[in-house]
Length: 289
Image (tube, rainbow, N blue to C red):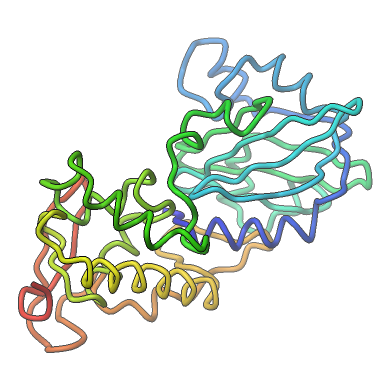
């Protein structure tokens, strides 16, 4: 969390706010500075001086998304590079006049990186739980997670690619929930939307991927696409920490059918839970098989 819909909503907001903006200065929080000094886990996944030197004075040409990652196409001295960011569990970007202008006190307190834009505004990355990450790379292919990632669910080849990868020998004996949470099969599916899509398609999350027919995998792919689109339409899911660039919460959580439910929204029976791929999974043994 956040998953693909929430990251896509952040991308769309940042696209409007910062594309074409130049970065005048970059500041790091005490935690980031001290973390690098003591080798503690920190947001910036490369040498601080290198990151600072690369980003300072650069212009943001485009804000994109790949799976659950944001990437910023940057230009500096006629050279193109990329800044990649993952929001982790509680990361958020805000565009305000200053860090002090961030409305949510908890996020304001836990700012990590502040990009001062040439127009006077500040693009802040805040992360309460500090599981996010940020770094610069020359090309997209230089970032290993992008290299292994399947095509996006909106790509014309996504359905065929998804079926081939889900039924590959390496995935055949894995629980289908674990398989669809692998970005090498389909990008962007996390714990919440995996449970929702499997419920909608009537597939037990524990079922081995190799035992699921092509027809049912097609239904699952459609369910993933549909739940992504529905979530984007409803501002994403705010379970605890997710916020949009303007600080807004999403309402997709009000439309969940199975995730964190006690009783099935379809048959009324008890919802079962099981740990799959280290995450708590919600399902109905009557409606899913």
